Each structure stands twice: as structure tokens, then as C-alpha cells.
Image 1: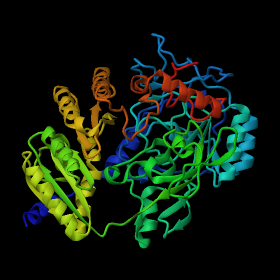
Image 2 (image 1 turned 180 degrees about the vertical axis):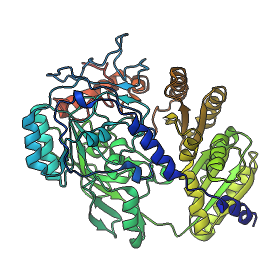
Image 3 (image 1 turned 45 degrees about the vertical axis):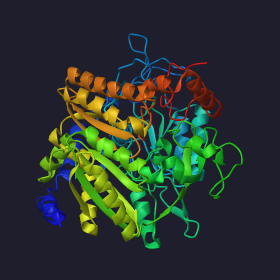
Length: 571
């Protein structure tokens, strides 16, 4: 088979550069730390506390930026319409039309009484150590700069502890920011108003597995990779695969998906119910374990995608799938990204039940070659995965091969050997790392637009014209089966002109997607980075409804304030 010689080239000269790249980025970001310590409102007594390194997980991005000085403005009445972060034009961060990337927020004195109460709850599982607070407060995977950091970091071990922590914070009207794997890309875990960071990673247990029902009950701190390692002996798996390091709680909070969403759906389709602690400390369970229910409001889906603004997720019941009996991985090259996108659309319209359809543009393939010493054709490429019985998987592969040949596809190859398939998907998972290795000192904006499938080819084509004309290094990777594509826009953060050009490209793609009835975010969430696009996408009436829900459940606005809902939306 032609694949054997190609695969030998693919594997021949891999370089173990990813760990070095992650470490160099971490060291660079820590070296950029500002002299913030003098501005802290509580003493930085060095205290032994749990240390959690995001670099130990293979995160999809590690482009943290330095923090600025702490704001010391008193803030005694946190408001849902707070405009304390307005720029000279009167625009708050996240307002429509805002181009600011410095995440600001008012900061108030942290009560010593609250420190004492948290200490009584958490014992040694809390810290006010500066390095630990800075680590939890800086944007690991976002290009935004941040002003404030948490005043305290706590590490609860149980749902009861979370409830007590939240009650105390609500009593003193102190902000809360839930924290998981720190893989979010839109600043969801930043602490613009200081407050308490609740690190959920000690709550990482599997509470119960129901093999016959194909569901599992887990705590929010467990990672999806660790969960699947636990499930493998039972012949089951959880079918969402975002960036390595992501935890189930964070995946719920951002309504994430991944490359398998084209077959199994997003997080909202794979959560049966969950438990959450509301702003007043109450614990709610959103449903039963039944696979379907028409009883009451769908509180499960209300919480999924709420990004910690309505409650802290403490338990999740997940829908599981059987590990496929057989699979085939295929690759095919195309002269243009439009040809590749057209094949993805034609494959879905033909009713082929693919489990993955991933598109890599020529820039990303070149980055893979450079980083790994590979020799792949540097042209737009589609990657497929077909699952089922051996006969079915092979049949579907041959049908797609015919579709690809009808759309200028060439070099169609496929792999059935387990190691060969693993190596191919490893390349896909590490593709963005390879891109960053071309410019390791640069920051990045990662677009996340998604459109109805029929518009995907047009959107990618229009975006590529704009990207190719830009002086910046940009690489496209798409979940082409469901209309979602990302562009990694690399820029030198010390060059304002480059930062503005990166923002312009992202702005262009978002508005192009919205004009095609698409969305500004297919899977990364809103956080601080996408708020400015929500009014155009959803309308002010929908945003006011979101605001009413938020104000009802969180009247003191302590739950992850400054995220998701644009600051200009007021009653």
C-alpha cells in the first residue's frame, strides 16, 4: 500500500520539541511579571499550599501575557452595569466597538474576616501566596492582559466546602472565579475584580459508573483524558476531546466540543444532569439520570455554557459511548481550502457517519513539517475518521475517496494499524503547537467562528483571501464536518500595529460568520474576549433576558463578574 512508505516518512524524524516549547513559553511569561506585590491588599506570607502546573498538561495553547499593576479603587457596591473599566471613548472592556485587550475591573479591600472564615473551612487547602495567586490570575491561553489577580486561592475537597465558601463570599460581596484546567481561550478564569479563585482540581473523583446505563457521575475536577483512561477497561468512553488538560467542570462551563462533535454532539448533548452551588450557597440538582425528561425548565442546559456566572458546578452525570469496534483514518490533499471544505460538505450530505472531519491549511501543514521534520505535502489537507464494523468503515472510506476525487482531491491514503492511526491524530492534536513553534515568542488570537455547513466553504475562502493578504503568520484548522473553524493569528505583542492587525483579522472573520447566520464562538465560549460581538449575534432583547437571569440568581454579582454578558447591557 502506498501508505506504508508515506507513514514511514511521517514517523521517521519526530523531534521532542513540544515540552521545551511549553517550558520556554512559561519561563518567558513568568519573566514578564510586573512589580505588583506592593499593591496587594493582603500580605504575601509564604505558605505551603497545593501547586498545580498547567504546563504539565499538554495544553493546546500557552501564550500567556504579562499582568499589569493592580487597581486600588474602592468598590463598595458591585453593579451589574459597572462602568469602572471604561476607556477614554466611554467604552467598557467588552462593549460593542471596544478594541481594548487589557482586562480591567474595580478592586475593593479584601476583608480579613473572610480570610479567617475561609481558613476555617479549607484549613491548609488555601493560599494567599503571591506566586500562587498570580499563577491563577494570569491569562495562560489568552492574549488579553490582566490588571488584577485573586486575593485568595482555595482548593475545596467537597461539595459542602464549595457551598460554605460561596456563602461566605456572598455575605461579604466578594467575587468568585471557578478554576479548572486553565485551558480556556477567552479569559474565563481571569479575576478582573480580585476576590476568591476556587480551584476545583482536588474534586476529581468518579462517584459512580453505570455500565448498563452507559453513564457516569463525576466530580468537576477530573480531566476528560483521565476519565477515558478509567473507562477504557469497561469498553466505554466519553466522546468529547477538547484541548488536553481540560476538566469536565470547565468543559461544561464553556459548552465545549472538539473534533468528535460532528458525530457525538457538543457538551450540551452529553450531560444528563449536574449539580451546582448557586450564589447564595444553595445546592441544586438539575435533573434525574433518565435519558430524557419533560419535567420542568431545562436547568442543565442553562448551566452549561454559563461560564461560572450562575453557579459553581460540583457534580456532572455524563452520557457515555461504546468504544468503536473498528476504525479507519484517512488523509487527502487538495489544491485549495475551498475544495477541501466542499468535500467535507459533500460527505455530510451523502449521509456518511464520520466521527471526525478535520481541515488543515497549507500553512499549518508546513508548520508540522518544520516542527517535526516531516515531509507532508504542504497543501490544504482533510483528515477523516470512520468507525463501526470493519466492513462498514472500509465501505465508508471508499465512498469518501470517490467524493474527494470528484473535488480535485489527490493522494488519498488511509490507515488501519492502531499505531499508525494514533500517530496521525497526534499530529492533528499538536498541530497548533507546531504553528507556535515557528514563532515561539509571539502571542496569538484564536478565532472560533462557526456557520451553517452550507456556508463553510464560502467563509473559509473569504477568510483565506484576507489572511493571505496580511503580513501576519496565520494558520487555519477546522472541524469541517460541523462548520467550525479556527485561525491561529500570531503576532508580536510588543508591536501595536501587529496586535491591531490581528484584532482586525479576527473581527473580519467574526462579522463574516455573523452575516451568514453563524456565531462568534463555536466551542471556546465568550469569557471576556467575545462579549463585544454578542449584541450583534443575539440581539439586545436576548442579552437583557440573560441579564435578568443573572441578576435573579446572583443579585450581588459575585459569580465570575465581568464575563459573558457585555457591560453596556443594563436595565
